[in-house]
Amino acid sequence: MSDLSDLYQQAVLDHNRTPRNFRRLPDPDGTAEGYNPLCGDLINVDVKMDGDVIREIGFEGGGCAISKASASMMTEVVKGMTRDEAREFFDSFRTAVTEGIDFFEAIDKLGKLAALTGVSEFPARVKCAVLAWHTLRAALDGNKATVTTE
Amino acid sequence: MAGPAKIEVPEGLGKPLDERSVQKLREDFPILKQLVHGKPLVYLDNAATSQKPRQVIDAIADYYESYNSNVHRGLHALSEQATQAYEGARGIVRSFLNADEDREIIFVKGTTEGINLVASSYGRAHLQQGDEIIISEMEHHSNIVPWQILCEEKGAVLKVVPFNDDGELLLDEYERMLGPRTKLVSMTYISNALGTVNPVKSIIEIAHERGVPVLIDGAQAVPHRPVDVQDLDCDFFVFSSHKVFGPTGMGILYGKAEILDSMPPYQGGGDMIRSVTFEKTTYNDLPYKFEAGTPNVAGAIGLGSALEYVSRIGMNNIEEYEKSLLSYATEAVSSIEGVRIIGTASQKAGVLSFLLDQVHAHDVGTVLDTEGVAIRTGHHCAQPVMKHYGIAATARASLAFYNTRADIDALVKGLDKVIEVFTL
Image (tube, rainbow over all chains, first blue to last red; front, top):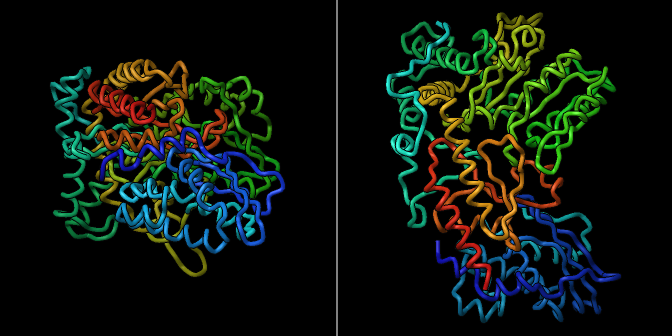
């Protein structure tokens, strides 16, 4: 296992303490609920679309620092992306947190989300990092059922 | 063969435990000697599963190395020896629980299977539409879901005794719930999420006044205190081997002989029959009626060895020692700023559940792990308990007799580190 500070980077702690876009959206075009049965954490993601582009996004709930920071950073980076771009970004992010990634490559590919790639050294916490993303994908797909990390 | 085994207490043991004698006992547990992330392992996840002493590991290895064989079958020497050890373990369990007869001890996979056996066999035979089963709000999922399945099948009603914010059952509510349709009460002895020790003797007495049988989930009780099923007068008692320093995949269902006798078999197969023809099969006597198939022989032998081990120390000594350790831990952890203890009943054992202000339990667990401190974080398979407090998860430190004040000090130091990481 690597150092604790790889997991809890300053950016992660900051987003945990003051999460961005931490609110429900009125009249969302897409909404979904995500659930991590391992810890009982629940998260809601709402999106407002402009055609195929994510115009506004908000989230509420979440739990641990990793899931909250991931959700908060997610809302910042996906704003302005098309559905496909957001899905592709999620795929890269998921690969990075499950398989690990060179930090500089991560910064290049994932921007601020690179701060979360230390999770790959803590396998028990990967689900925390991807919960919000699974939920976003469901919101974009118009999937009504609660998505889980299992 | 199946005569009641006697647990010998060698001289010098069976005395009250103190830090020094516990240090000596720790040497019996090979796993406790290791480093985790470069730090000495501090194992405080005993309510999830306990560690195994060398004696138990050796007993299991000896079975596989020297006399592995199927039981109740062959006439050959190994089968004879395996059968004797397997039935000897039953005798040890009987003696440990102070049950009346060996045949009242049924070997099962664990607490979960024990409860499912009763729900399936006793429940199916005795429950009618509109009947009621009473459990409590602090049950582990394994003492909720089997009853829900049964109630759904039978059109019966599951009633739940609530607890107060300290984590103590509301016995008045319980008394009011018991009615003419109540067919069974199933309650935990000690809550795995809160540590509450329930007044099970009164709970049983109150039910019996109305002729209602009672099942006690003893999974969290057996590692921490003496249990006497005849004194409790419970009708069923279940526990798991792995929580009391024995192997996984093994557990005990105790039932009063006359009730077990009246119950239909749970599973069909070998060992549980007397004779089989396609026209009619007759079932075996207790306990074999409920032990279909080749049993977990090594598991039974390991459990027997574990119960002998703790009996040599003395369950009353373990109870006293842990009481003092839990109050030390409670005081130490409570004194950390931002800590809220979940479960503050006047009678507690083994478990310290808590929240740390602004820090999620999972983050607490991850940071502690890097310090070598193993605790459990989450809902502890007791989601209704979490709902009671409006929380998703707690951090839970849980004790065994091999824990010391140094372990608690390491926990406190680890929590200081958590606060350091999360406070800029």
